[in-house]
Image (tube, rainbow, N blue to C red; front, side):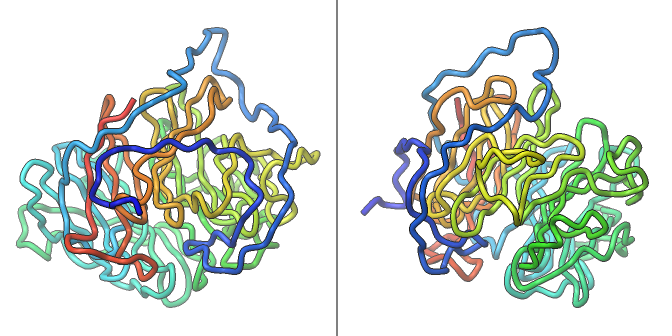
Length: 388
């Protein structure tokens, strides 16, 4: 059995496998044999101009540089601060902490009021305002008693520990909530608009209903209003037909990528085009059906159950929960340029969130204390990685 504390990386090809199981956050539904999909994915966005993009090497590597912090309770969201340090949210405790990346010292900012943690819900994604230098705002996506919502709070590090968060200002409410499929990832894009990945709370038709906020990627102003240029007029909806989006990241050409939990067959990596219909519940994985955008890569749900993603060194890096590994997806334009590779398989358990740390560095959180892992001494952790 692979030791979780080992640092050697193992490689695995993401071929279209013949076994799958439900990929909510847990993957604990019975496994159902399925046939492999052979349809190819159409190009889902312009290549970024006439300039030719060079693919990264087919084979990459991952080095675990150090453990930045440990002993974290249900870490979910992770956000670097401009002045240094990392903010990390606790799904079940409803708190946000600041981690000093040099010493590992933890400072509690405070508890987010109104969080109702249950199942996969609770305090989920967090993001730092693009105007943080002037407004000091932190954004959070969380599950309340009635819905999922997004709030922003003033962060004042001069106040006593535990009292550094101001009262939440709700900028968006009414995102469908459920025991599972709450989405939860938020991130500011290169356009300084706020993007949010949502789930369909186990009600597939919500994903195809453009009037619902469930099963979507939403794009909004920092005030929570529909962003200028959204594809459906005065609507927050940026793309639809999603089952449960928990990973959002942009590449060097400012193209948006998203990871998505499958159900019985395929987990997905999608390249997001404005107004695109990504098929759920009509399509899962690559089927080549007219009117739907196929994913650029798929995995057996046993090998992935993807949550967070980040881009670095020409690749998308995808954290796997049930798969208990970190996937590297090398890109050339909007295409996968070589077979995806897996690293850290079984070494640190469930992996939740991965964030670019500049250059060839990534921050990675484990997720062994979320009720579906097997926590060991020191769990959960934030790791610093060097990748290529």
